[in-house]
Image (cartoon, rainbow over all chains, first blue to last red; front, side, top):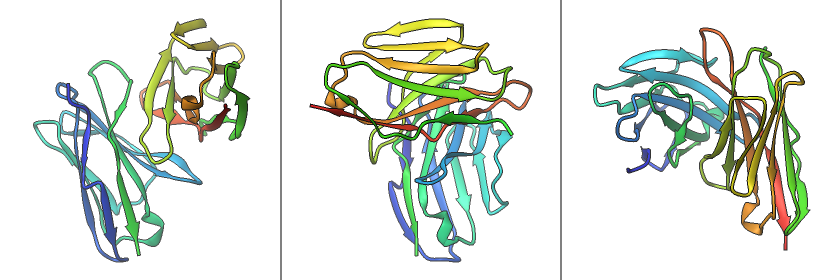
Length: 112
Length: 112
């Protein structure tokens, strides 16, 4: 089976812009979670989607949003980018009925 | 606030030795525990998970869970330089708002 894929892999944006990141889960996985990873904060949970519904949400401002499509692909959007949004954004998918997460390669976002 | 704590390290061991990585958690109701490995610049990859008290072995890796003391550990036997990475502990919190709580990780260096 193909693994989790994320696009783009690298992104450079300037403050105030917005960005959309995409994630395609492992075939058959309906749960998709998003994380932000920075050296000092570790893995911070953003949100989880299951069957097109947000099932769980972390403690991030409303500038961070996401959605999931009927084919389980997911997107996350960050509006009005700030310098502190520079991070590795990871997507993970899980088989139904388990919490085991399989990560994609991540999107490295740099905000200038 | 539910927490997962790991010693940041670096933990340095000679090649061939046993590396012992520890993780403590605060949510007494937690039931699922995961160990991930993350190489520098890469995304986390699952090593193993454990649900029941006691030991679980998978090749050179052994996870140990002690729910009474609220800790989970990972032993790596016959450590190899290729095991040098950051090891992340994740704990599934109890209750309706189920999500993985992540430790900041322990950096392991295996010296040839």
